[in-house]
Amino acid sequence: MIDTHMHVVPGADDGAADMAQAVAVARAAVDAGVTSAIAVIHATGPECLDRSTASELLAALQTELREQGLVLDLTLGYEVDLSWACALEISDLVEYSVGNDHRIIILEAPYVGWPRGSQDLVFRLRLHDMIPVLAHPERNPHIQAHPEILTALVRQGVVVQITVPSVMGAFGGAARRTAKRHLLRGEVALLASDAHYHRLGRGDLRHAVKRLKQVMPNASIDLLVKENPALLMGGVAPQPVTGLASVSRLVAWLRSLVW
Ligand SMILES: [Fe+2]
Image (cartoon, rainbow, N blue to C red):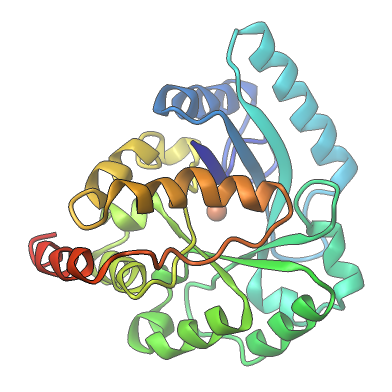
């Protein structure tokens, strides 16, 4: 599997305080079957960790992982606060893109409110041929109450990334139901861990995959954790997983009643 959202850079944000915690997060991912990942750092303002320092920290982690025999390919990225991103020029946002190709921007859905400029931001990003990935929108109360907001963004080209703790109910029933709703609407392209050391084990992709097998065919789940992440890492915007046959979709809905 490829995890498109993991907080593992040592000392960079609330993901891992030091090298030991970072290795623990990486080890848990490897144990879960993750072979490569986007190592994101929270970016909520200009004071966030700069790219060159972050790259050095990530390189040190990669060296440590190799010495410990852990095979995990990590690409640096940021998780940019959506409200802050709306106020930035695209030329400034590029600094916080994933890897070196300047095309992928991971945006963090807020936990309260919803910025009015989100559609304008997505329009500007698409105009620059960039790929906006929206992390865990299912946790936002506005999205929970107004699914049409997310639907409109998906139509604009937003890549929706739901996260393991939401699927597992760790953030409550509303987030879990919203994740399920947009999955079954065919609006979700990625499932990621959003792993942090302080909630080690609650970002285990295997658990969410097992849960989703109750409502989705294996091929669709592979798209969420393998094929679509691979496309994204190759600079191609993955499409939402919509390939459920009508009978499968009906069965999924019926099964979802007990999820
Ligand atoms: Fe995150």
